[in-house]
Amino acid sequence: MLDLRVLEPCSLQSSLAACADSQVLGTAPPTFKLPAVADLDGFQKAAVQMVKPAKGTTTLAFVFKHGVIVAADSRASMGNYISSQTVKKILEINRYLLGTMAGGAADCQFWQRNLGTRCRLHELANKRRISVAGASKLLANTLYSYRGMGLSMGTMIAGWDESGPGLYYVDSEGGRVEGKRFSVGSGSTYAYGVLDTGFRFDMTVDEAVELARRAIYHATFRDGASGGVASVYYVGPQGFKKMSGDDVGELHYKYYPVPEATVEAEMEDVTTS
Amino acid sequence: MARYDRAITVFSPDGHLFQVEYALEAVRKGNAAVGVRGIDTIVLGVEKKSTAKLQDARTVRKILKLDDHVSLAFAGLTADARVLVNRARVECQSHRLTVEDPVTVEYITRFIAGLQQKYTQSGGVRPFGISTLIVGFDPYTKAPSLYQTDPSGTFSAWKANATGRNSNSVREFLEKNYTETSGIETVKLAVRALLEVVESGGKNIEIAVQTFDEGLRLLDEAEVEEIVAGIEAEKAAAEAAKKGPPRDS
Image 1 (cartoon, rainbow over the protein chains, first blue to last red):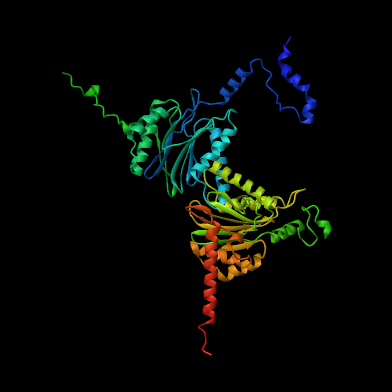
Image 2 (tube, rainbow over the protein chains, first blue to last red):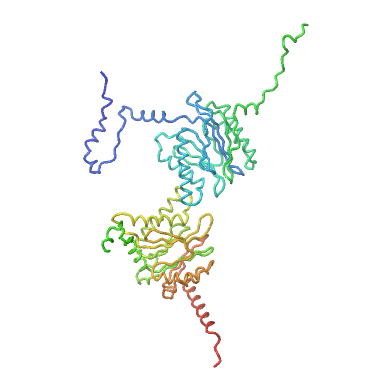
């Protein structure tokens, strides 16, 4: 005989039902249906964990003399399974605003697309572009209103506006921080190692691009959840430009070429002594 | 015709919204207000009703600050202005909070005008009985702006404008005499325009000057008296010059 007690509404609900009259009158506090489980806290934690994919990725962005560099890998992983090596993790919000993706791919794609829409509406209403601070604030406010509901995003908003280059880190906990150098994702620590060591504010654009490329490569080398293609974008006064997209496997052999092995003599050529 | 007054969501057969037109009448009865935009200075002037002896003049303000860089003068129902200005002040701060930028003059004008329009298309409410003159500087380009809104919810930008009592005469004067001015010249132009319809004297005029660096500054009575006196002297000198040197009989 199946134990169907679990399907009955819990006692809290039935006592609330008794107050139905006051609900009709509008004097009762608002109520909502709770899941019919014994351990509600545990259930909620498990639900959030299930929806919240690990932020398996490496993205980075930094401000330097000539603008902002944004770089990312392109691997998507579900646990030990590499589901894709060709994910676009740098999202073009508009011609002068870029966003990076870390965490839930769907969350990042949808909300950054939504951000693009709102930025455009701002432009149309106010006859001027939105600032990087404003755009990141719109996103952060949106994410804050969904706090605790399982969104998973660790994104950087980078761009160029009237006050120069701008870089903000925004996450699904509702946090928003302004900064000059960020790296986000499971490979971020490895990327920081290379990035922080090699950074100089007055680098040329090419030097900055190479630094970003090397940092991403290094993260993909050490972190299993990062890999695929290292993309590097540059954002300057004219807007963004994709500078390079290199397969990290090829980058490895470029940075660490295999020395020519001494050719061993074929057996036939060996003269019998 | 009287039937179309009651619910203002109703048009009259010949396309009028009578409540809006009646609101404009209320504005026309209000104290005169003038705004003049200069190159780097914007001036707001209002006709000051003589305050009762026991009344604290500071609490009867018709030129109000919306934010550090935007100010407003109005003509019409003072209480309606208070409510509208409070909503606008909240919107200025809300804008700063959500996009980390001060409002542009155009944005807050659009907001106020939108609010005034909403009350012409809702049930059970009457329009705001005020026309406003909104002035300020763009926080980035530093360009000065002057906008006017009215009870119907329309707004437009002006180089100089007047509203309230006898606004037509003041506007005529401004049309004849407006030039691009700066600093004290802009103030003098505004005062001269207001003096067309207001009794002369610092007691009857309130002037506020808005600059990019200093924000809004209300001139005190002594300063206004000085400017008025200066203008009177110029007028007298102009009259004398017109009459020419005394002719020999």
